[in-house]
Image (cartoon, rainbow, N blue to C red; front, side):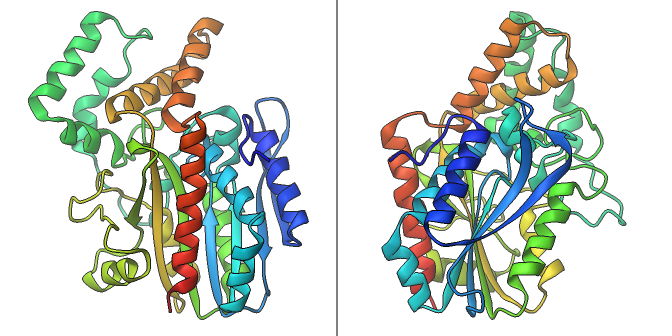
Length: 356
């Protein structure tokens, strides 16, 4: 049985069928205003496998970055079909909380961002306070989204000259760390909490209240070597937090704070929802980041997607090129890649079960 799908609607049905077959309790949070690319209903679906009153909760999320949801959805369906893993969870007084398609709009429309062009993993900010200014993004922005797509040779040469002068690490950080000034730009964090932000907090409050511990595995794609799931510390920038995360998932856990991760240092990350919603819970988490293409190609795919967002008049040939690039950037469409995703997500859950 294939756990992986080629559309949001198919992925959602596969997940719901797997949850029902496993006897998991289901909850659905329909999107209040938007529909999918084929006119389908959009929702964040939640499956709870195991005892509702379990002291420990292992949460696995998919689709925080919409188009990345194909990998996470397949892994979640595989977990629900793993009877031995579910039994091990129960024996360890742990329930498995699977949150499917945190960003259903982006999942269905093959965008990394949501219906408001907001990157959800930059959206968990205190919007009552002044927002940070990403000066490096402002510097590079005029070169990112040229007047035509694909870019002319001259436009691309100007961008590559800047990247060569400043370095790929500077370029990745400038573009991806998060910006709050250009609503139509890339990696925009928003000016208020989005529907997905609010709904994720509701899910945490509903299913996490009263538990002693919460462990969170958030599945992502698009950075790092082909098929390798890099476990990235997802919590505060403190030695104690990093040490606890590595005690659970191993010494190969990286951090955005010390430069060991393939990811740049980011703002507004979703894990901030935990202390906001469950301040007393014992928390640790990782983002499990599966590599696809070189970072330059991934950023080019995102440039094309944002160019298309700014140019609704684009013809179908341009649209097809952008969609194909996004698919390749965020999904490894090969058996070895899919098998590796399932194995590594399962191993991460088992490491969580085994930890105190």
